[in-house]
Length: 234
Ligand SMILES: C[S@@+](CC[C@H](N)C(=O)[O-])C[C@H]1O[C@@H](n2cnc3c(N)ncnc32)[C@H](O)[C@@H]1O
Image 1: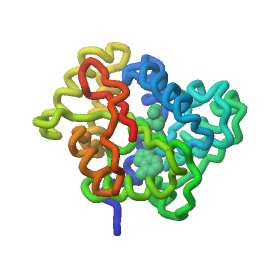
Image 2: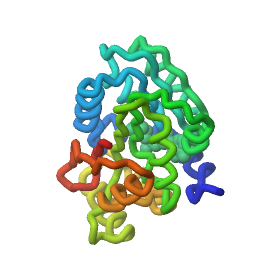
Image 3: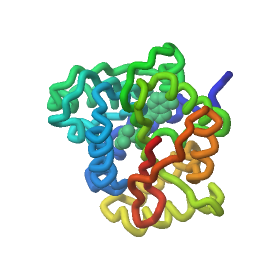
């Protein structure tokens, strides 16, 4: 079945990594607060083998993983530019990193080995739509070791909010608060978001996870003041 997201367009945006790097440097998407919780969850569950889907340049997770006792880190991304940077950024973790250039849905599907204690997906699942999200949870579930966890941080919408209302609200908030970016930068981000982003509500995430056979309800580990940027665990 063909995926509903457009891998070529997503890759083209993230190959121009500099803009997203500046967003992270200004902590506009709450990476620091989110990753404090990611690290705490990895420690709580004693996760040793980590799979990071849509890992990008792995700049933030490289700091998160420092001094944790890991036996492996696998990062998967469509963008070769981001993966090159990830290879450098992960050196400081001392962990043996495996970086794979692939669509993460294809990567998840290529084996049924349950080999990861934690699957992390940061700001990447919002590209998936409809049944692809159920399939994502279903594939991720098969790749987890018993007791393993799925950690998803992303942009989300309120239950009663449409996609359009959510994207408009987020753009207005970015324009007001991302003051170190130019109007052109904000326009580039808005164009990418309009073309590729499908933020889900908590109920929608819970529905797709349950359809995939995940029994537990999503646990909210972090929510930014806007409620848009959140971290959930299963
Ligand atoms: C917004 S960045 C997030 C990077 C990092 N996880 C973070 O938290 O900052 C999204 C990344 O997901 C990647 N991506 C999006 N869809 C993907 C897919 N289907 N398969 C693999 N990578 C994907 C993009 O190339 C990009 O590097």
